[in-house]
Image 1 (cartoon, rainbow, N blue to C red):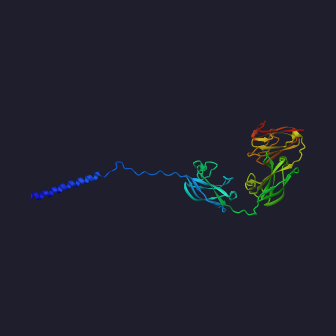
Image 2 (image 1 turned 90 degrees about the vertical axis):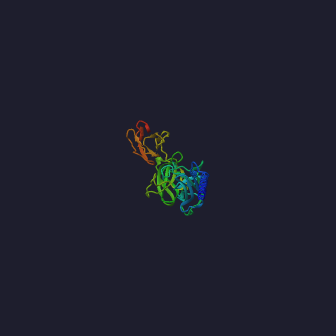
Image 3 (image 1 turned 45 degrees about the vertical axis):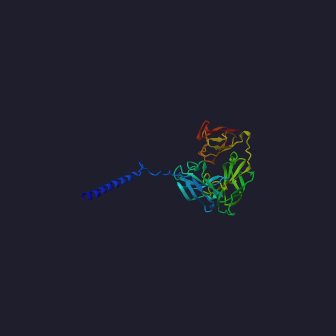
Length: 366
C-alpha cells in the first residue's frame, strides 16, 4: 500500500521540478534592455522664405500674391517697374511667420506699371510699422532678395483724360510781366514762375491761377528785382484752400507721368542804368549764407533779398536801419539805399554784427 502511494508522489515531485526548470529557461531567453531610451526625434525644419506670383487684373486697385512663406513676421511689398528692376513702392501689407495664402495688397494705380514686383521684407523694427528705408530690409535666401516679377492689366486710360502741359517762348519781361502761351491743367491749378538757380528752378517770383483744361496766353506778374535772364514756368495743382497758393504745402507741382511739368525760357530784363561795379541788386538767401554777400550799388538802388532756404533767416542791419524779420522759403525783403556808405548786415538766427557768421555788406556809391 505504501509503495502505491509513494510512486504518485515521486511523479508529482519530478513534474514540479521540470516545470520550474522550463519557467526559468523562458525567463532567461527573454532579453531586457538595460537602458531603455525614447525614439530619436527630427529637428524642426528651417523656413525658407519664398514668394509665388501670377499674372492678373489689377484694374480694381489691388493685387493678390498666391503664396508667401516668411521666416518671421514680415511684409509683402509691391514695387512698380523701374527700368527692368523694382522701382517705387506702390503698396504693402503685413504677413505672418510661415505660410500665407492669397495675400491681397492695395496699390496706387496712378503709379502702377504693367510689370510689378512682389518683394518680401522682414518686420525687424517697430512691430506693425513698415520701416524701409530702415530696419525692415528685404528678406534673403542665401545672397538673393526674395522678389518675383509679374504682369498686370491696368484700367484703360480715357482718351479724354487731360495731360498737363506748358508751352513757353522767349520774351521781353522789362514791363514786369511774362506770358505763358498755353497751359493745360488737369484741375484747378497755378502757373508759377521761378528765377534760375544754377540751372534749375529757384525762388518763386510770381504766380497766377489757371483753370482746368486749356488756358491761353496766361499773364503772370513777376518780381523784376529777383528775376534772372532764364526763368522757369512750372504748373502746380490747387489742392489745398481753393484760390490760395499754398506751397510748400498742398499745392504741389503737377506731373505728367513721373516728370514735373516745367519749361525754361529766356527773358529780356530792363537796363538797370548802373555801371559795371554796381550791377547786382539781388541777393539770394541760402541756408548758412547770403549769395552774393558783398555787393556794390548806386545811391537810390533797391536791393531784394530772396529766400531759397529750408530754415528761417533774417536780413538785419548792424546799425538797425533795416530788418526783415524772419523770412520763409520763397519770401522776399527789399530795401532802398538812399545814402552812400557801407551797410553791413547779418541773420539774427545764424550770424551776428561785425561780419560774424551768416552776414554780408551792401556798399553804396554816389
